[in-house]
Length: 254
Image (tube, rainbow, N blue to C red):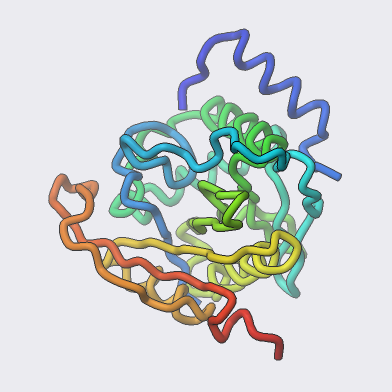
């Protein structure tokens, strides 16, 4: 994504420095909301054209920025944490090795062409994390620190407590269960500390790997939107809508 001018960049980088960028899994695959057809180098699903974000100021007095978030999320194999500017080199290497793997699902991949693009994106992720406008974390191998991919809670509705989850993995991390493991960690954050009433996952109906991730984590298929968006090949494609709500089995205590 191209920076929007030196002044804007300075503000974003100041936010990053102020927070130290750390505010107080068999399949992999890639998931992207249909709107990823929009151009740009954003490493994650962009907003759908014409879509009004649910993070606009609310008529209530609730302040999402005061919502506490953990510095890190852990599983036996994975570490999830907010991105730092120092992650830019690793992110670019992961994207660059995975272009053929990501291209069918994510139109942004060919617009992400340099480490500067990755650095700019890290700064934007950090700013959004502080504003609670989008909660994006890097997926890293717990033992080695290697960057494996990304998982996000997009388009939060803080009044309803609803989120949309998206993710991608680098090509060399596919098929090892990392996507399922990472999505479970972020779902646990959403339904636990963030008290989610709904977590939604959308994917291209042709993306079998992403569908299997949703099913393994316990998402319920709510419907199929026919010819819902234009895919990266320019052809209309169907979109599957999965969701978890408090009545779903995944939400019930063991």
